[in-house]
Image (cartoon, rainbow, N blue to C red):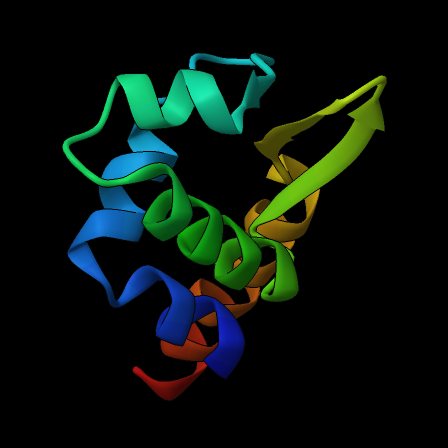
Length: 88
């Protein structure tokens, strides 16, 4: 859980995450083109998001495509809400 909040604690990573439409897969170039960040910086942020399991990735040819790990995020956030409900 802390990896998720740490990864999402950065404004740039939040913006990257918001670039994804439902069920959309984007590569580094597409994300960099939609961002004000350099490609190398985008790659660093994508690695952080992938390491936290916020994003999943797959290499197809020369490109790596990323997508939001909705099942994992949904379960994690439901666990937080469950904890908050129990604490109330």
